[in-house]
Image 1 (cartoon, rainbow, N blue to C red):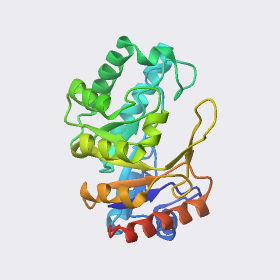
Image 2 (image 1 turned 60 degrees about the horizontal axis):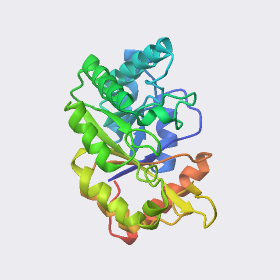
Image 3 (image 1 turned 90 degrees about the vertical axis):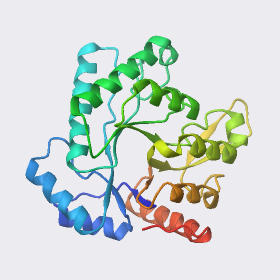
Image 4 (image 1 turned 180 degrees about the vertical axis):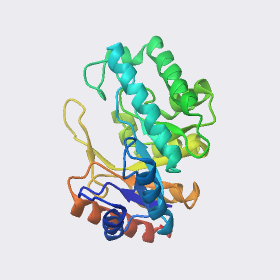
Amino acid sequence: MRLGGAIERPYNNPEQWFSLVKELGYSTVLCPIGSDASAQTRKEYLDCAKANDLVIGEVGVWRNVLHEDEAERARNIEYAKAQLALAEDMEARCCVNISGSRGDIWDGFHPENYTADTYALVVDTTREIIDAVNPRKTCYSIESMPWMVPDSPEQYLQLIKDVDRKAFGVHLDFVNMINCPKRYVFRHEFINHCFRLLGEHIVSIHGKDVRMDNAYTTLIHEEFPGQGTLDYTMILPWVEKLGADTPFFIEHLPDFDTYKSCAAYIREQAALCDVHIK
C-alpha cells in the first residue's frame, strides 16, 4: 500500500513540492495542480512524480454537481469533466467527488438527497462526466458520505451496477459511512464488510478515526487516526490486500506537522501488523 495526505504548505514548482512530499514520507500524493495548469506544467509534475516513484492517487473535484441552480450545476459538471481530464493526463488512480446535495450546503444533508429522482440524477450525471472524457488511465469515483448517495456499501455496489461504466471506481471512506449507533458499535465488523463487498472496485481510501459520545442524542465525531476507537492493525491488512499501489490518504488535519505525525502513526500501526508501506 501507499500512504499520502495533504501538504498544507505552499510550493511553486515540482522541486519544492517534492521536497515537502519527501519530508512527509508520502508514497502517494494528491494531484499538486489543477485543471487550469498548462500541458507543460502537467508534464513537469508528472515527470517529477514518476522519477521519485510517487503515485498520484487523487484529483479532487469537490463541487456540487447536483446543485439546484441549473447554471451553477452546469458549471460544476464542466469543472468535474476538466478535473477528470486532468486525472487522465496525470495518470492518477482516480478523480474523486461526492455525489452532491440538493440543499444549500454542497456536502450537506437534505431530504431530497434520498429521493428516487435524485438517485437517477446521480447516475445520469456520473455517466455524463465519464462519457465526456472516456478515460483509459484513470477513473471517476464518488466518495462515500453519511447523508447522500452512497451511504452504505450495498448502495455503492448498486450504484456501480447502475452507472455501468468501466471507468467508475469506489472511493472508500468507511468513517463517513459510520453514521448511526449500530454501525459505530460494530464498526470493525462494518469496515470488514465494506472491504469484502467493494474490494475489487476500490481505487482509493481515506483513513480517519471515529468516536461516539455516550450522550443524548447521537453524536458521532470524526477524529485523527489514533485519537478515536478504530483498530488500524485490523484495517491496514485489508488495504494491503488491494495491491501494493493502493492509495491510503489521511485527511482533514490542520497543518503540515500534524500530517507528518499522523503519517508516522499509520506507519507504526502498519509495522505492528506486518503491512508494507512503500
